[in-house]
Image 1: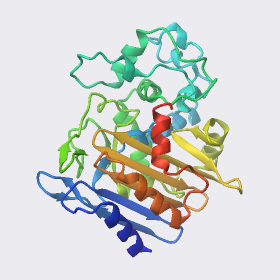
Image 2: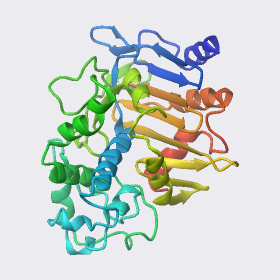
Image 3: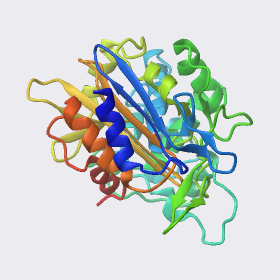
Image 4: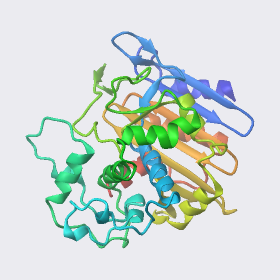
Length: 345
């Protein structure tokens, strides 16, 4: 099996002197790490299992876990109105609950559509709040449907900060990383991102440095940097944060996306014929594409982190997933299906 995975990676990522991938394939019996390509083209640093990648929207599962822990601690509940914590929000948001933010059913406006064309500086989560407070409207009544929302997760990061009285990075460190012994992960912007991969965009015959965009400094929707080794420590059924209560809660608060796939607590959720669930998510941002899938009942997992924002990852993921039977009855290619969901198509 290991040679087969190597062959699939080599077939999909042919060049060694190029941005590449860090891959984990985990079964109940073993965890295998694979890597190919360069984390930094300038100094030819090779990617390995300790290289940290920008997670983009894969970060949402960490934001959701922080909120889940605050709910479990009794500081809020799923029905808490978000405006009771973020009173700056406009009157139209009065019926939005924490649950609506977590499962993308709030109807909150997409902050990306509110950014002025002349803006040159990167946005923060607080900037997102400032944009939203200026427009007193929603796409639809809260709870009535699914619409993927980066805005919601930026605002959830602010809720974490206000309830913990800590910065979002410090809160994630204390609530998640430290308890799990994760030492190399961080949240951008950080003065020290350990063994960082830089992002690139393929051109016709080269790769263009493309590590940052206007929205690369928002935290709650996509700011986590983590390595394959540390992510494997996180996405494991031995993770003490993934309690039976957590999985039950995830299923209780899910909402239908489409094609019999749901969303809850920072995860897309699919059900097999035996009723067991598989969770998955991708991450797409300037210079980075990632894909992860996890079956908690069997502890099967596949993760692919890439520091190039092309769609080569889509074919590699589907080829890796099939022989490992890690996902069942999902749209193919799954990465493209997710891309359409993010675009609300």
